[in-house]
Amino acid sequence: MTAEAARTRSTGSSSLPRVLGPIRPRARWQELRLLLVVAAALVIGSVSLGATVTGSFAPYDPWGLGIYLAVLLGAHLAQVLAGRRTDQILLPAVAMLGGISLLLMERLPKDLVVQRFFGTSFGLAEVQLIWLVGALVVATTVGIVVRSDSWLRRYKYTWAAVGVGLLLLTFVLGSEINGQRLTLQIGPVSGQPSELLKVILVVFLAGYLSENRALLVEQDTRLGPLRLPPLPYLAPMVAMWAIALGIVVVQRDLGAALLFFGVFLALLYAATGRLSLVVIGLVLFLLGSAVMANLFEHIRTRIDIWIDPFSDPLGAGYQVIQALHAFARGGLLGMGLGGGLPEIGGQPPIPEIHTDFPLAALGEELGIVGVVAILGIYLVIIERGLRIGVAAADDYRSLLAIGLALVVGIQAFIIAAGNLKVLPLTGVTLPFISYGGSSLLANALVVGLLMALSDKGVEPPPPPSSRSRWARLARRGAG
Amino acid sequence: MDGFTLVLWGVRILFLALLYLFLARVVRALLRDLRAAAREPADRPGRLVVIESPGGEPAVGRSFGLDVITPLGRDVNNAIVIEDPFASAEHAVLTYRGRSWYLEDLDSTNGSYINGQPVDGVAALTYGDEVQVGQVRFRLERTRA
Image (cartoon, rainbow over all chains, first blue to last red; front, side, top):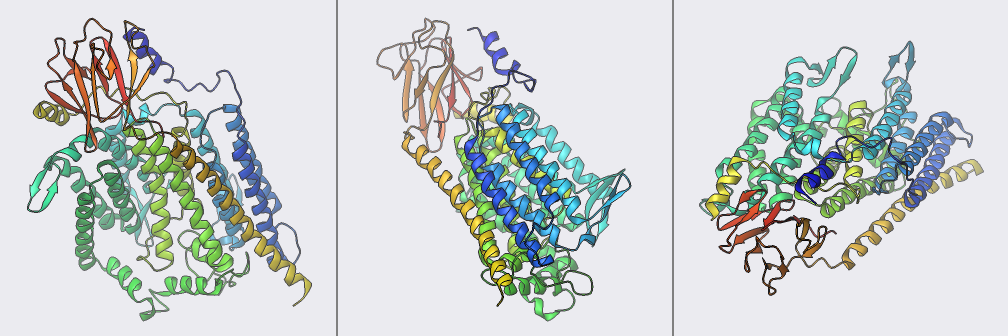
């Protein structure tokens, strides 16, 4: 085969997704069996909720649950028809979390969120159902259509520019809610760019680290007892650190900063295997946090609440104390879905329960047993991502899969730890469970990409033709 | 305690039990997957896949498991024998040191290339890179887990 033919074969077939190609269905029994368990669990959960709230054994909101299960079945059938050999565990795991989210939102007061689409107003559960359906559609579509990662791999600096642009746009145009500048509103569309930003961050870091991995591992700049990689390669680390601190200062978004920096350090470790880099990063982060805490009132407040919420139980510490009480009331087996504490003065006892404290609500109603099961499902998602990363054909795909899995895992950890007063509370969402369109869609994109990457028959990665200038210099120098 | 409360309690426990049934089934699938991966020989750090070979020896698509030191060349004593008029008898050697791959050109007549760049002495390479010896091109890949 000539070089020309080889090239056309490797790139030509992938430039257009073969959506309308020959259809060769492939059964996905494992996925179907797991989805049946998910459906059974959700129906029983809905009956439990209905019995507690209305006093009769019937599903609480049969239509909502029916629509959700029908869309799940549709997602499964679409994947069967597409006939790709992709992961069969991710979709059921996400479906279980999304279903629990739906049950929780049906149980919370409807008027926490009211949105009007086309003259009809929708309450909390309905809006969440719309977003959940959207998330399943996004995950399935991405999982079926994406057959090549070259559009991510080749344009990593373009993606980085898009990310920085989004960030700057939010800095300048973002509207401030509760002292945090997170939401970007353009016309009728509003969203939280930091959710999309975390995906872009992983795409860029995977590209950057896979390209420069050899250099980061091999060469040293000695600084006393420390062995550091060559100084130019520390620049992105410092830049990441600056961006994270910038997010804290301008957006007052501790959660996103923690998430971005955590993912960065985890990927750096995955790419280089050098613990020294992680230690340096952590020291930098702690130093930065200490300085920030001294400079900014709102960060100091967060830390004070974390250390002793009972010093101001009805003011700053109220939210955290109510969450702790919710976990305590839940005990081992919980109060049952719908059995949590009724509203105080028309509001649920924990402010922002649907976005920041869903785990506390679930802790109250399902107990520690239920919370452990939910955390277990997050572990399953992380395990799948790491496995896909280990089995990947080259460094880029490997780091991309690991980063995507960790971005979900670290985010779940940050907010779960915040709910449980293990870490200071930060306002990130609990993936797939919290209310919110941006969060659900961004996490669905992550799962869709993971499924696409898990395909065993995916096209081989293109040869890395253009190397960075530094890599070429180093190669020459090594001789 | 009346019947309704008892049945409701049962339904609540059943929901939690189904959550754990789901987890148990998933974990069993994960374990099966990990065991299958562990059975496959994974002691080799990587493999070279032939992507272009005008002479047909080695054939395109053939995959060579790599040792820590893998010599390439036309001589039959090489681990990977390349029947190509442009390859030297002892052409190059691939080594795996630390966590990285290196290609050393053994002063071959026509040189060795990584991604089209000539190798001067020793050069580092990573998974996904293309190695050219003579007219034969390989791609360095991870051993599939």
